[in-house]
Length: 135
Image (cartoon, rainbow, N blue to C red; front, top):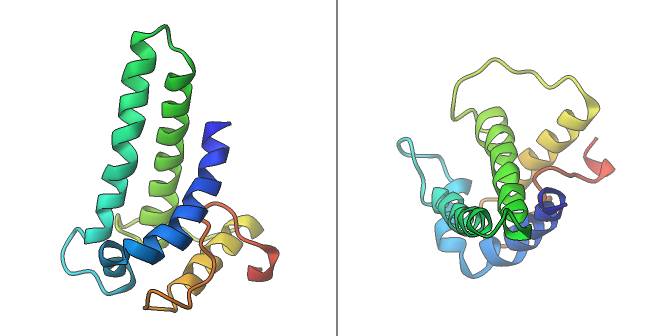
């Protein structure tokens, strides 16, 4: 449940926070990368810190709901890294060609998002879901 909920959190965060008051970090992601890392990578750290805290706290308290939420956040982060950083942006060089309609749709939506290089005017803010208009 937490993993699925994270897509909504990511959409809201990407649209109104990352393309809002945190644009100074994110704009590096809409520009050609200089080197291995970009300022935008700090968002991975910002997501990992609460996930780790929830996992540790939950494990110390009988593997309660906090543990499961932390694991959901971590799972979403792993899927995001695989899709976004490896498959879409090829930060690790692999041979991959989208075959399924789903993968083609979310990859197209992400490429449409990156056609805009400014804080305003972008669309397609989800990571693992894209409306059918991107088919």
